[in-house]
Amino acid sequence: IHIPIIAGIMPITSISGLKRMAELAGGARFPAKLLRALQRCQSDPEMVRRVGIHYALDQCHDLLNNDVAGIHFYTLNRSDATRVIFDSLGIPRHRGAEASSV
Image (cartoon, rainbow, N blue to C red):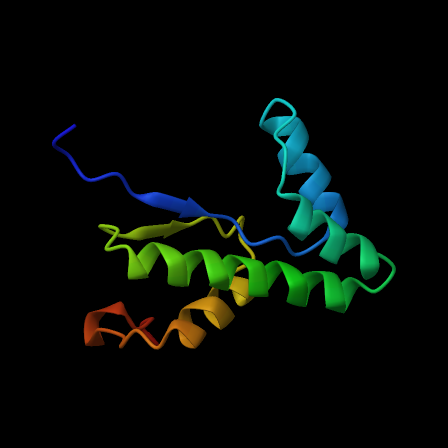
């Protein structure tokens, strides 16, 4: 393959969202470590969100440390988790990437 493959990251922000992802992906399986962490906090929606963001952030660090060509974030119209991840990565924003205030 001679074209870059862009990794896709969809932060887990809720247990119901995780279940929907699994169904839409034809019964996708998730790493046991992630599932254990989510089970420990499943009754606390904010902790589920934090665990999901932390896991996605770890994935992003691993991808960037291995020189991926880029990362695509699936936000599903909920960009707050992606903003937290992006800001935590310490990647400088380009001037043109800022939202217009017009």
